[in-house]
Image (cartoon, rainbow, N blue to C red; front, side):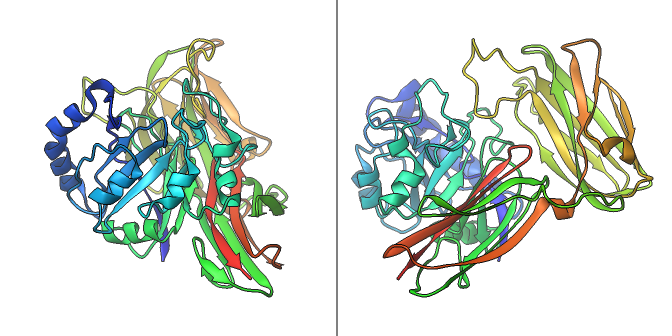
Length: 455
């Protein structure tokens, strides 16, 4: 089995159960068949799609409705029982969304959630913020209100809720799955609709802010999402593979930290080997739009791979051209295009959970102390040797203060971006839950679905 990422909600359609928003169900029904046809036409081994829509309820909270197939009936539900009446084939899921708002303000209602047979996973992170716990980073700052501690995921777990963790963007900007606003990873047997669906139903899921952190987590051989029995010793094994060092890695038991560590203690003094280097473009004055055409070349080294860290920033509705794309990659060069916008004034606009006017690439390279990087663009140029970057990042502005800039971050060896450990534990309650959470130094985070162990 392997981990992969897919966008949990390819298309969001805003509706309310009775009073429909922006035309609501009338608009949905008008275009629904065309939407289903377009979704099915794009379903492939490269892009796996699930038809879906979003249901709003002040009383029960918002839910995303998904189907495993080419069709999905629109249901004008009054409550969750209406979904159960309409969907009986076992090929539908309802997924609670931005659960952290208070009750009667579109936060989750734990009692009705637990009573539904259509639930398996819960969204714990999106551009609304993080709803994992009272102390979680990325607090709620949307106009819909603050985060309610009794509507967080850890509160639900302590009340006996069992579900998988996922994240999704909810940006409604035509750029689903973009960096830092939420992705879901699945432990699936293949990259196709049926395999991913089975992983969702079995709770073999992780929630990610953006970086493609690859986890492994098991207790006595049972993977994430499992329910097992063990009255003796629990052998907990876990690992994480990221693209930046981990500021912290925590094993959580029943809401309390059981083990905490960091990969920052790793000795990074070596000069030759495999590294991750992050190249960022953006900044600039408030709402300043900049179109970047970038080219990076490496001397005395080689490019092994690239991960795009693209946020929407600007969507050009006059063109079908993507706002960001990698246009060329060789073993010595990478060329990409991007569009950035200076961060809006947070005193005027509602800030997002990870507001940023920056887009980036994380490039995996084979390098030594003789390696050098040359960045060229239509905005700013920057040259630096590998040794130049060892003390820290290098920056070049396009012009004076407040102008757009490029930053090449300090490279980190892959060993510093990987953690692996195992611990043993004993029962504390009739049933304990364990989960894994971590954050890289760039704040990209992961929450791994629990394993439940009964005596």
